[in-house]
Image (cartoon, rainbow, N blue to C red; front, top):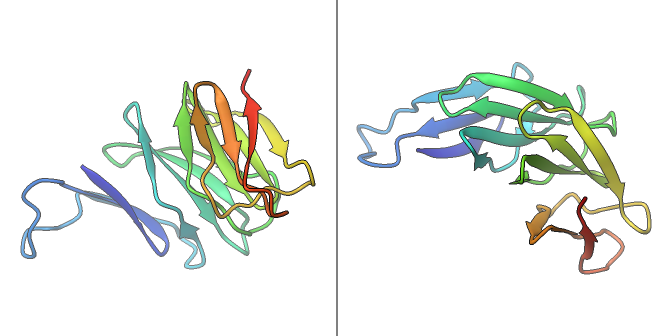
Length: 152
């Protein structure tokens, strides 16, 4: 399967045998608001995750089954539509970069776990947070290339 995003949704295609005449989506989710922009999806343990930005309804993290069922949606705490980064999933936690901070959610339920603001109060949402060997790496808007935080 190949998962991608369009302007206002998430789409799944068969990875093998997809030619011009045979490449119909297997499933797709289209947000009812035409203003929602989705990031590139992340796939982990049978779940597809995508961060979404909407200037009118606010930013949110979405989770779908690989068959296209929406499992949950978690509003990002900033409360407004801004800039979001693609999701990283590691050890049962979904990390979502949002304007000003990085949020951690339970990957299975969408329950918020914690929020991390940058040393100068702002993480850049343009780059996806990365987790390696129990350390979270995130870029910042203040010109610092990245910061590293040991995860609990």
